[in-house]
Image 1 (cartoon, rainbow, N blue to C red):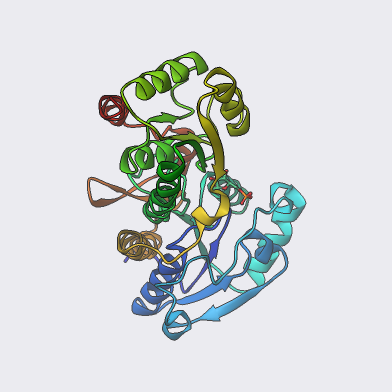
Image 2 (image 1 turned 120 degrees about the vertical axis):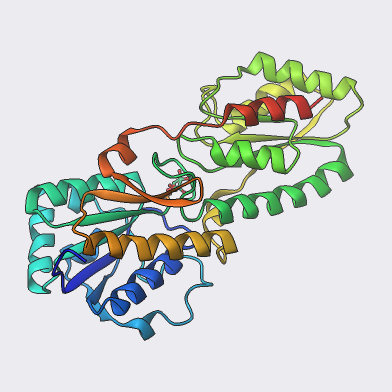
Length: 328
Ligand code: F6P
C-alpha cells in the first residue's frame, strides 16, 4: 500500500439504491481489515455540512447486507452546490481528521465529489449506486439489478389483471434520462412495446404496432414507458392518444414510482457492492483519487470520475432488435 491514510469517510448520496448498505458494509470492513478508521457521514453531503458523522467499526455494519435503502440515509444536497456549503463541509472533514472520502451515489454525487476534490485536494473514490444504470465506466450500477427484478415482478402482476379484462396497460418505469430499466424489463416481462429516451419511436409507429398486435389476435397488451421517453408526452398523454385512436381498447396507466428503489438487494447487487467497496478502499490506499470503481466484463476497474459523469452509458442496440422481433 502506497499511502499513510489513517482515517477515511464514507457517505451515500442522491437517490438511494438497493445494495448501498452492502457497499457501506464492504467499505467499513475493508477499512478495518487494513487497520484504518472509517467515519460514516449521515445524509450524504448534508451530513458533511452539518457535522453528522459517526466512527464505525466492523460490527457497526452487522446485519445490513440484506437491507434496502441506506442506513446512513441519503440526500440531494443543494447547499453542497454552493462554495460556502462546501467550505463548511471541509471544516467537518478537518475537524474529524478525515483524510479521504468514498462517495456512493450517482452522477450528481460524483460531480459534487470532483468539485470538492479539486477545491480542497482531498482524495475521493466513487462507487456507482443508482437504479438507473446511467453511469459510464461500469456495466452495472449498484441497485439496477434489484430494480429490474422489482419491475418484472410488478409487471407480471399487472399482466394477470390485463389479461382478465382484455386491457391495454401503459406502465411507466424510472430511469431518469436512460432507458435501461425500460428496455430490459420490457423484454423480460414480454411487453408489446417499449418507449425509451434513446429511440424516438413516435406515436404513429406505436399505434401501427398496437394495431398489428390486435389484428394478430392479442386481446391484452403491455407497453413499458421510460419516464424520460422522448415522444414529448407523458405516460397519461400517450395513453389518452392511443385510447382516442383505438377506442376498442380499454386503456389503463400504472406508474410504478419509488417502489422501484426499495426492497432487499438481489444477490447480484450484494456481490457487486461488496466487490466495489473493497476495491474502493484499496484504491484509496494505493494513492488513487478522482476515480470511480466499475465493473467491466466481470472485472473490477477504475475510471476517471469525469469520464463516468460525461461519458454516455449506451443502450444495447441488440436488445432493441430482440424486443422488436419478439413482439410479432
Ligand atoms: O436516480 C434515481 C431515480 O429514482 C430516477 O430514476 C428518478 O428519475 C429519480 O431518482 C427520482 O428522484 P426523487 O426520488 O428525488 O424524486
